[in-house]
Length: 221
Ligand SMILES: C[S@@+](CC[C@H](N)C(=O)[O-])C[C@H]1O[C@@H](n2cnc3c(N)ncnc32)[C@H](O)[C@@H]1O
Image: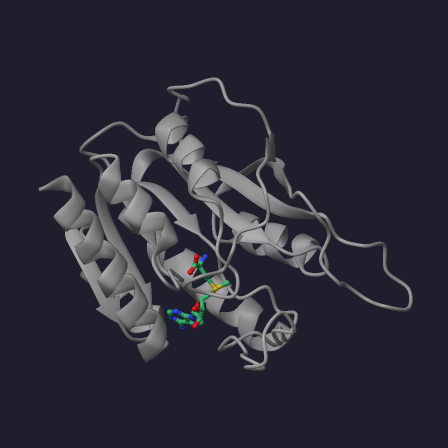
């Protein structure tokens, strides 16, 4: 399977064959009403208010449950404010919550200027369906520099994504990202010989992902 889809994932998840997904690796809207201050574009992220973010995560995880293999992993990036809500959604969709890993960056982002500690970490919730086994004994703490956000304002580090994909899947397994943005997760899955399925709502993100996936195809040739 190799699919890069533009649209609302809630209208496309049904296209994934039942019992086929070894890893859901996704970075959904955090529900923090993100607005970029690192450039002058004032870019926002669709469905990033708390109500929509929780609704689409809940509905996507419920739809994905039968699509997951009997023994499989789900990994969901999260901000701090919605962390508890996201964990509850994961549990109520039927997955077995395992823990929260941490990505420590090289420098902090702005956060709340008045009352908050300066955020230098992002959280990574992981859960299982059935009893999968890890192929690599990785730890729950990753240190990678802040991303340059060349293709998307909330990109995740390639090395971190590769550690997760390498530990939780083997070549030929299927990795899915239903909130794929510019495709960071599926680009790495593809480069690592996994099958992949990615969906994204925003047409600009779709084009960025399309370009990255085709570039990685050209590199492999
Ligand atoms: C936090 S960003 C993911 C960025 C990604 N990690 C990257 O490296 O490009 C979340 C993405 O989910 C997308 N999104 C929001 N609602 C969606 C939906 N219903 N279906 C598919 N994508 C959606 C947003 O447009 C945004 O690109």
